[in-house]
Length: 283
Ligand code: P6P
Image 1 (cartoon, rainbow, N blue to C red):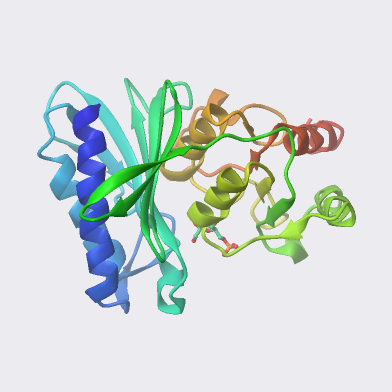
Image 2: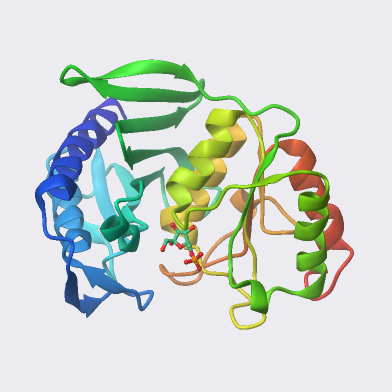
């Protein structure tokens, strides 16, 4: 696992360089989720594959930008990753990131053992969740230096309400409005990595990407985005649910499967569970 952690650091340095110097234009291709790719998506995926291929403990990888896994060897860890999440924000010079889930045996929520993400913003940063907790690193003077531990308290003050508001279920809109009525501050950039990172750094709050009338299974992908962040948020002392159950209890049927997802400190996510368990169609 140490080799993978070191590999992710190398990936971060290379992708950050590519963002600063590379082309941000659109490619002619689309990924398996139907998102039109930008040239940096393809380059970032190539960087990740190139580094992970050389790590003896990696059996295979699957990327949000690929339709099938790539097998390197017969034994080892499985790595599912989103090489450049929120890449459409790069032309606005907003913070984006790479997300990594390290799995053993399969790609269900029960198979994930480690997760982390890279942040490409004013600084290059790395967050890595292991058995001991969630560690936060910052790239300074040529290396990633430990900033500290990320922990969630009981409740926070910020709220990231994803999804097309015109397509929210009525009970979901009432839940979000009630939180704003309690004084929560809107913190939503359209990038899952910085939006959840902000909640982790501030010690609490809620990020919600619900099912909607046009997309009942939500938008965020289980293997590459949801399971990694569910592990990270739980290791930081928070909760991660689909509205009625822990996200890490979920399986999947297709590599691009999505799920409604809520991540955050305990008090807010318990409010989500109470509302969702009382409402159809989530019973
Ligand atoms: P919307 C980025 O494309 C992404 O996959 C996540 O990073 C982000 O949370 C979500 O989609 C934003 O979706 O519908 O608000 O544009």
